[in-house]
Image (cartoon, rainbow, N blue to C red; front, side, top):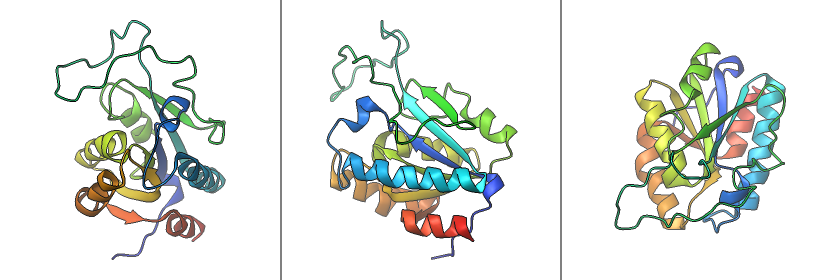
Length: 192
């Protein structure tokens, strides 16, 4: 396993869907509260080091006209969203200097200005976390990898709907796209 080194000016922390409407749902293997706590520690360290923090949220228009609604065997029901569904949890901010990206699907690149915001800031490395591991985080990771970003996955700052789905992504998919590390290892790399 290669040593993790992070260059603060060219590294961004990208946190996916840590918003009221998502963190209210059950998560595994880590409870949403634990993910939020560790994400807040990472965000504070990244901000202190001068690294970019990107907070991604998913939100749809009230009429759902911008929502993907293809037929699928296990499509989630389309129900009215509570008013605070898209609000980023207060433990994360946003704070001055953060970038907030609103997406309309699982991945944070397609149809958003995420790639533009990262490239204009000369960002080369993305540290990813959020909920859910195998939906928003994995979709964003695949797109980021295809765009040439170096990826680091904060394993304990990520959770899924089931522990099995989380484990599959972290044992099979993410090691092929980048480096998998715990948040303490990432914090140590930021301090170096």
